Length: 301
Image 1 (cartoon, one colour):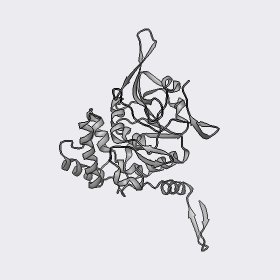
Image 2 (tube, helix red, strand yellow):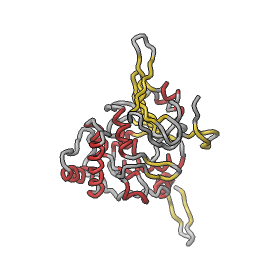
Image 3 (cartoon, helix red, strand yellow):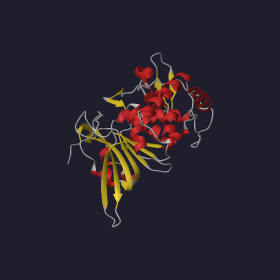
Image 4 (cartoon, one colour):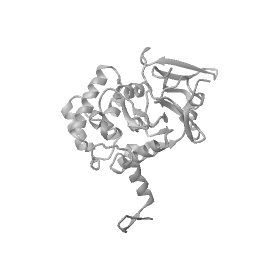
């Protein structure tokens, strides 16, 4: 136990772990609605209704205990995802519908949680817009049991989404206080019954070098822009594994689906496809660590 003395002389006992959790949450300005404990245990095979707005909202209220207002917004954005062909696989549709994006935005942006575009989350970074998250994730064709690495934990929304597709999610965040904040958010939601987030393993590190101790990975998703594909990430991808990564100059990246094909003779052939058919997006830069401090970005070899 740690003892702190308040200005009036009162002695207050605070458990160090609890104190760290409270500091992490309080410092975020994250303010999703106060979700009560999830009423029904998580079932990876449970599928919310996808044929009606009212049916979806009612099912989610009963099984997940979530706010009807945000559920309605989630459903409306889902219809837009379908219309723009940003999600097409049934399991990926489920992953989107089961992930409460409102829990991963800041208090200032709570009313905008389901808007089209990215939103600021502090530290000079953003939460990626739902259309990009959906298309990038669906392009990876993730299946239960796949080992997935995410570069750029950020708000935590992407990994939360992934945890509805597989039970093996590994995520790296370079900004130390943001990494701590998001880990505290996950732990708080797990305590409320979002047990799927137990699948998410996090660390504070430079994602350029991947997570060698946990390699190889079936799938890798990079959520920050860079002008080349990091060789360590390609090396840590399994044979016939896939990666999605924004590649290009600042502010104009092409989101590439990279497949590491293994040929019959054992050699590898890297195949690239543009998931936006030539269109460009703007992602936060892929920064680097030097001596424990973030300094600039990783430039092409």
